[in-house]
Image (cartoon, rainbow over all chains, first blue to last red; front, side, top):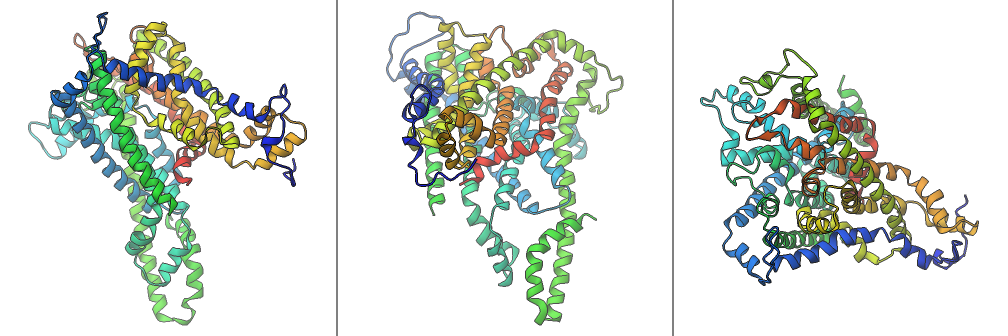
Length: 309
Length: 310
């Protein structure tokens, strides 16, 4: 196959031979699978908007139009909604800091060749690949009151009497969720940052070494600025993932004690599929959607700004 | 001799320049180099320690789950914790298997294979169109990507309502459609990246030689981006296999996948039956762990691909 197309014009002018279909048609025919995505995302979004403006309760056939009443109730009178948002943001914030710091430190420590790199990357791939449901279950096994293998080990090390009951304490239950998510996703952050570090040009470091720069200076003035783009991308991926945190919470703490670990996704799920308040839940999910889109747009702007430099 | 190999590669960078500069510097350069060497040795020890700690922290919880599958219910929740089952047996596996485990594995397999096929087949076509014709421009490409990041709970509620009307609740077909749709963006994004690397001149010259557009995509571009195809397929499979929320909401009564079955081992009457749950969890993660070992190269590449590429 020679790649010399010489001075011929672009592919758009060459007629393909399927029944005389030109590229102009083929390109759109190939896009047809996107209809499925439109059907599953755009239509539901509009439908959610419609539902959120009605009083839509389970199987009750009357669904009167109530305007923005659902939204008003959510924003002014629903403590659990605010609670869900705050808990989601707390878990998100702590997780992001932990995972970025741990992931970056590990990536810096292990950049370049080293003994056991293969072992580390393989083992590190395991948490990323297993289902968050299993991670949540494992966290429960590790921290369940009286029996958890991590909880009891901690109690034994610190000689706590009575032992710390992680899952019935609002603070420590959040720690359990955070530990579970950090356990699962720090490897992911590490792997991406590692390949990011590997792609950095070497020359500036050699120059810095000649100039007698310390390792810290090299990190601060060379590595960090060059890694800004990739760090932001990882932050975006993980941040948006954490905004929809659901599986781990359901399996590890079951949102408890009380609503101490009830993330916004869990609360909306409860509204819709436990209390069958579809209209109200749709309004809540619409607000969540707006938050996510605003956060994502801001971050993507920042990324765009960085990558243009 | 953990330091040897590591050192040689670092030395390739710093050593080159070390060979050039120290010639005139004599003593001072020598002293500098020996402290560097000591520093590097300390760093190696730190690295080995960190690797060991990380491996332990990662592996022990998984080992605990696997071991728990062979414990009796009493041993599974015991204070102090029992690490090694005293009378390991397959009893939990038998219980789990007949008590919905086999069915959930069958359901998961059907929707995962179906959903992966839909996403990959559809995604490849869209990716080719966007890669070669920039169809729909930047806005469409961004929209496709953005769907992947939106919270599924926002879509789950209206889709559940819609599915009830369409009688798609509790059907494999319904789940396959949802999984196919929501994994399409990932496949499109990955495959577009790989296809962009295949020179367009190949397409053009093949078409001059009488190949059709579809033929070009199928016989030339796709084989050349095969690593991307493998990566995208593997990861899509993993995403769908692990998915919980849609499976929970759209298969409320009869159709339960492995994650849904895993989440229902707690009841008011019996309390928490964790031993068979651990057995099912083991079956759920073993294929994934096997994939981590076999397909490591592809998976890491696909994961890091989008982020590293600017």
